[in-house]
Length: 396
Image (cartoon, rainbow, N blue to C red):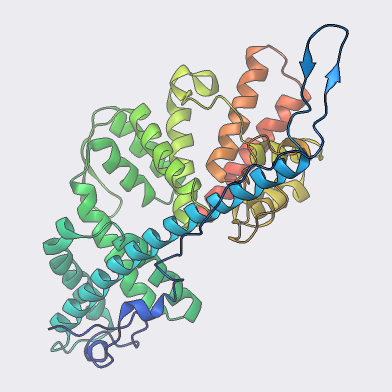
């Protein structure tokens, strides 16, 4: 039976990996996976003195809900939301544990392949990549849904511990998994994966042009052949948008760099389509503008464009200020647009890069449709352009 190894293994990637057996679950420190179900009893209180308004006719009008009944309803709603969050948290940690066990198993098998090799630093990197290809190639169809989630968590731990050796190894595994999964995906999904690994804006635009033209085999800058599939620009933009929605609707964003790359891919693919902002293919059903993004955009429009506004945009795109992830215990102070009470009573998500640019585009589209372009439209165009530049800096 294989021994488990900790994610925090030493700098050498061979023998020390197998010298310190430890369970992955001890590294997560999750809350209890068996949350207690609170027992709720509902007793509708009768108002002590019913208020009745007697008119000259025979109609009678009741006084509605008392303040006590409204307090009970609000308390019951909060208890129900807390119960649902506990259930969701339990399933999250269970998936994380299962994925973590598979990650440690992959590391063990790679360590077994590398332990008898005597190599220098240059050949070690190549050997690690080959070992990852061999091990993951056999397991890619059997991976748990929480594998990538656990891998991202372990990479974050390595960054926190400033262990560059461990972080590099885990990133090799992540890239190898993504490469194997990409080959089994539809063409537009493969293109999104290629674009995520293309740092230069000009190269991404050239790749999009060739893909839209039907793909084929091309020579890269280093002389190697690259096979590009043919794909539709609209499918590429929609795929990136779907991935963005999945990431941005979570309470916290696990990978800000990947998020920024997906926003750039969506915006560049849409920009390459003929209709621009007003292209009907870009209408993905956003009928109600999100509260957090509208509030932030209102603040930006009230400020004069310049360095201070750009710095504020950069902080939010990096997950600070209005873009900071919500804490689990932050239940009070639910606010809607312009500081008013939220209609839904649910705390809005922080400002997200993809949703923010979507909001800017929708507002701009409304201005251009009504032929009311002016200072506000120019200001919004400036915000849109500078947000893309900030995301370019974050992404690569």
